[in-house]
Image (cartoon, rainbow, N blue to C red; front, side, top):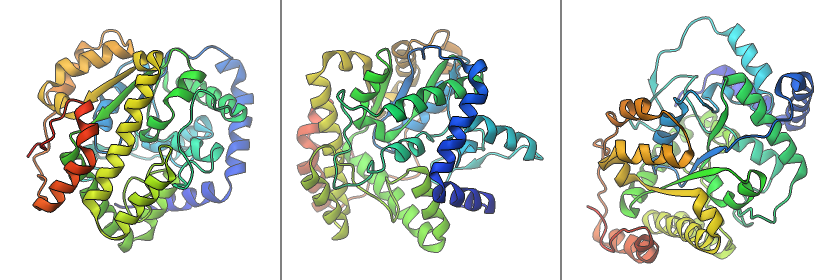
Length: 366
């Protein structure tokens, strides 16, 4: 939970001067045009789903593939101009960082060079209402934002050149409401959406919310970092995802306000994954581009699941990295869901119908 002085300082600058960040990004693109060109972007790969569903594991696994290029922690807070910022960091760093357990306290060790979700900063710049729960977060195939699309394509080209990859890989939990729009921008895009059994998922989200809320009360800089990096999944700035119903989003926020944590988070789960199922069923081509990965299958059969994902993403020669990562994947042993019966009943009531669509039984996994 430590937010260093440089992260505070530069993060504050990026938040106060977003137009400057965009201008620097466009300037960087002009300078690098001969290097990055206007080449087509081949089959970008997106990992998404509600937080705590296994998206980080999937990102880390496939970020190790030599063909992929992705964002890293070090890209914060200036993903707008990744080339200039990373060149500055390369010159400023005086020693390698030791791996540390990330703030989630979930056994995942990170350094500034670890892969991370950072493109949300760009989405927030060009879609300023992206996290306004009163407005729909859904971006469909009819969405158009020429300025964003031009900047985003060039951003990906720069990241590929910077990291030496041929395939862009992004983790973005909120992209679950943008699949159709992303597929319009990139018709050959491939998507992996992680889902988790609702009782365990609600327990993990609630645990993280308590952890981050406590940290943010102790140090407001933690809340600043979460907001500036586009993480509204937990903590004092937690905001429900509006999947097309402002009324549902308001009801989730109200349940949280009344401290009905389990029911509110379960309703969020049902809203997001219910929306996903409806969208995929109504769009066969998008459904074909999208692979649903259950967290439980990933933990029970890591190698087979990861190999299937690699095939879906069209990443060749993935056997070695999959085998290495599979050995470290296991269900969490540092906590277990411990809901009173009334809260279990609330989770069942809110999620049963949607959970069945993903092969989960009505009775929760205990």
